[in-house]
Image 1 (cartoon, rainbow, N blue to C red):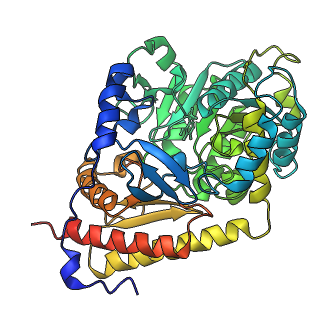
Image 2: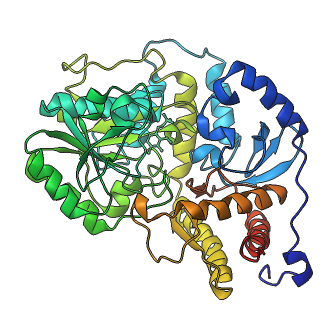
Length: 448
Ligand code: PLP
């Protein structure tokens, strides 16, 4: 049993893996890209060492440029629910690519992927494909504004919805606040249209609706907030949100870029059995390729051009390569028992780690839902708000991340990021990962 590690091995930090080639690539990359990366979190700012440049992925494993092998729990930030380089996804993409890669004209593949989604989702009747999660959310917000003829939106502190201007907004001080821009370059006038409140706080929500009566076009939430830790909400809170939106003629947007097709085929809406007005999905519907979509009732969606007056477009929207990958991936997700198996594997993994930590009085809580997990260095039973996370606890994650990397386990490079398990993770992978996690926790918590 993994629980019984040789006592002598437990307290030994492993030597750092070689990152020579990654360091060389990073030095070059810094001359090409700001900070050497094309998306900030990849720069390893919150964890130890030079960013690892990935050379290959297969199943649950990835290899970096130096040839180091890792069991991957980042899964390209979630969408690789079948693991890397899945044979069915790859073959479908290759088959489609034999016939050309982009037309900027409709293809049958778009219908095929739309059917897979719509025929198995009770919450939306029509959708529009776009090329990223950011684009999906940005378009959903425009749809809500155009549909309700109102300007303000309400978001929650601790939810991430991509990098469009209206959403790069954080809470100011006070219960209900106009947002403050969280990035230079976002005009204050944009932030003034975004109201930010804390998660899991019905009073703040009510106050916002009192203060901005008949002005709020949409409330947007990650129903499973998974970008700032895993801030699991109660069904009651989500239901209160649903009710308050209905009472006020405000559209409820569930941003399911992470939870969609991950915690079940119908995502969080299906899990909590709550119907939002608009849903957004991301790269998981394209097998990890650049895709997203937003969907709603036919009545709402028909406000989008060319039928309606709300403009939204994209040269690469519905491109055949991404559609092919999506068709192959979603078909797999629909096979009987897919989610049950994935979830029970995750439950067992998390429970064993939690048990190990609890027995040793380690201040660790592993939060989980579906096949998502998050290591929180806390003794709080629940963490439902961004403010509940102690920033100082991130030092422990940093240490753990280094130890895990040195033991061949790859987690996203920030303690605020969640981990993902794919159907490609084998029992052996998970046992190996548990052992590495136990050893790393022993080091983190027994530090002098
Ligand atoms: N919404 C949520 C909930 C996300 O997690 C993300 C990114 O991870 C986005 C939107 C933006 O997606 P993308 O990075 O594909 O633009």
